[in-house]
Length: 372
Image (tube, rainbow, N blue to C red):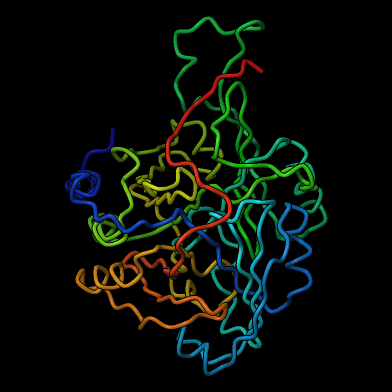
């Protein structure tokens, strides 16, 4: 059991974060995470790589150095590509910014849960095949670190039940793949499905979905610093916060938790989309390196996430009222009214003006058991 004055303080802060009354959360109309934004210096390899996961280019634009300075405080020009997985355009997209000159290497190839690290999560039909591929690359001395896929029961439906050959266990097998320019988490469901939470296009070579949720490794003075996600963005705390330790099989394997290590976990979800969730992790026992200075636009790797909202001006006013410092509302490289703001936990967001998408997101979580 973790007991200390510091941990008790943070636990209180967690409950204050999760305890914002639902009727006090503003109706911003915000989406789930719309895009993962990746910085790189080469377009071809990045586009080809993500094509294997089912992503295709749907738009592109040239960003001048003057525009980049105004929008992102990066005095370097770029070519920008927007990629979509299958027909899902409501969440889980990818934006690749190919900078004319990178400001730095980003967080890069780092140990799991390095502060500033970001991971993007996809549903797959065959996690073993994906792991085999990355293990081969690792054996050739390429900078990929795949963890061993582990089966877990996050729904807690197998406890005390008579599972076996005829009533097969329900659960998820998941793993992480840590890389130099991108960090993945893959998961495969067994015995159930959640409509609207991960859609695998048949044309996806590796049989993977759009990005379903997003992990952030952070260090803050108090988890109350995440409250703006509810009170300014209009997201909902997923549930009461939890502590994962080396006793939790799934997190231990995915994050390569050493013995004696533990972290806080807090999730947030849009009231308008069950997909595109945010998951924040902060170590409470066991030190991790801090690369947060490299977590900024203009560097390599995942450096920003975007949302869209039909009430952009309102969200801009809320963000300003909460003491954050958003940029002015300007047209981004795709001609969309938007602004950028950085949270106190180090995450950078772009909020985009958008009324609707072709794909209708799912707002109600429904679990369907399949016994497959």
